Length: 249
Image (cartoon, rainbow, N blue to C red; front, side):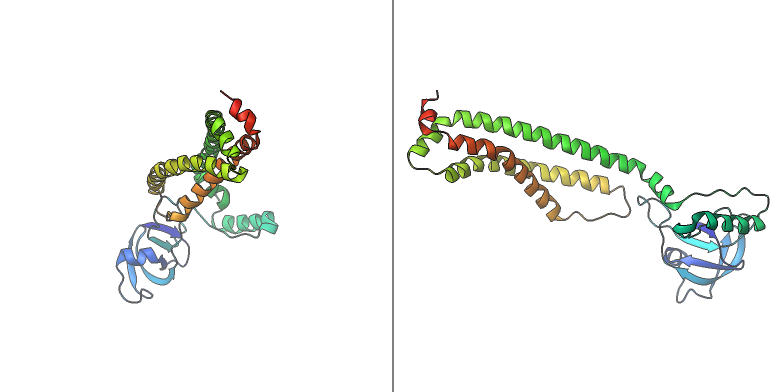
């Protein structure tokens, strides 16, 4: 159970998770609860929607909002971004009138949230970098494999052209061999990628569902990149003079 200090001294507000946790039946408004710290009996005067004060890896906890000036140490204030300096001065003046001996320090919520997710941001950056490197290396490998395949099939291409095969027909034939390899790689990669994503998302209490279209789009992008990489080579190979192709050893 988490306690946040605000409101009126003998009254409390609960979030919905706290209502469920405490097992309050019927309308919780007007009921009383016993607080162990600070020890007191307080009346419920409001129900607040569940708010996540912690990283998304954690589930929302039951929260009791109350006031106890002697132990209050955090205050969340919504400020106008156009006049933050004046707002900070006003907040400082009010809080020091209540706690004249305390030093008031400030932290911005967006900076706190950013610091909590720095590890995830670095992970995303590394994933993006290595994904780009993997795509680049895959394109180089595809380029080399296609060049080798075309050299081995130079005579076949020449014979097919002599027999009346068009450039588009030859390109479809050659690209189909590449598509078969891509489909085999896709079938192998999808279960591995899905398992890795499920394991990573398992660290979060709040997470998105993995839909089939995510993997379908990834496969289409891989197919497009691969075909764009090899199409230039296959086009040049099919445009060659068939006499030169037939002379190749």
